[in-house]
Amino acid sequence: MFPFTNPFRYRRTAGIRCLYALALVLLPLALQAAVRVTDDLGQRIVLARPAQRIVSLAPHITELLFDAGAGDAVVGASAFSDYPEPARHLPRVGGGSGIDLEAVVALQPDLVIAWASGNPAAQVRRLRALGLTVFESEPRSLEDIPRTLQRFGRLAGTRDTADRAATAFNQRLRALRARYAGRSALRVFYQAWDRPLMTVNGAHIISDVLALCGGVNIFAEQPGLAPPVSTEAVLARDPQVILIGAGSADAGPLTARWSRWPQLQAVRDGHVLSVPRDLLVRMTPRLLDGVEQVCAQLDRVRGARD
Image 1 (cartoon, rainbow, N blue to C red):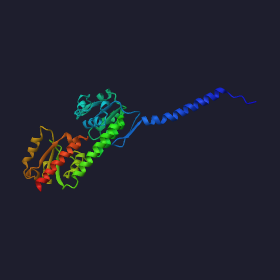
Image 2 (image 1 turned 45 degrees about the vertical axis):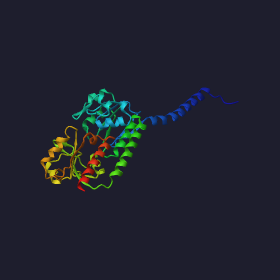
Image 3 (image 1 turned 45 degrees about the horizontal axis):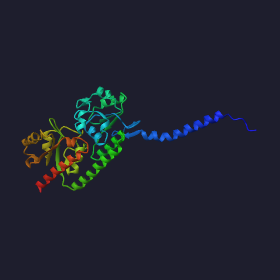
Image 4 (image 1 turned 180 degrees about the vertical axis):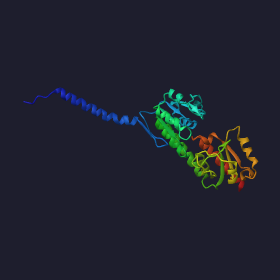
């Protein structure tokens, strides 16, 4: 005679086995759904799912999100987020004077993207203390732009669109580097602002733009990304080119102001030039439009010198 066996015990065991097998199937799917990205400060960002409500704390970040296909997920943006057109109509969450923390929290974002060198660090820390997930972005080179697009695409679940945008950027960048390789060097003073007089140092992405075009930033060694400089320092370094980042309305007055120093080589030779400010200060695919303008201007200087 066979020993007595409890059928209920076997049913429980079979049920446990089924649940275990189901867990083994669902676990990889859960792991795939989670989003894990490292930001530009080396901080690990983990989202349970792609972000559905994103707040951008800088105009270039807003533009990059739209380029990465995540525009529909952006629910708030900083002042001056004016490109592309839909960005103009987003709720504002602060600007140059700082972040409006209450406005950010009220939008209930599942992701905030901050500008590491452009947003007050104390306010960014406060957002984290309030329980918000914050990705800090800090593109410093032209190659950082496609990498940022790809990470934004992963964060927002728009990877295919972001990858296409990154590929298009890389192809255009390679073509520009090949076109302008081997150009003779020109010493350039880049004027980022006029009052106070400010420039950029060698770690700023604008220095990367100048280098691609054969320009040498005369203040590359200065501390700080956007250091103030004196007119006397510019006179002492006597650049061959003065390149001013300007708006359409102030380009003329800003270039004319340097006529007071005819002893400067750039002034004497008529090489005080301007480029649209927005095309160089926003680290987005449109920056390559700025690269083309800078390279063309420096080539005209070389042509005049030959």
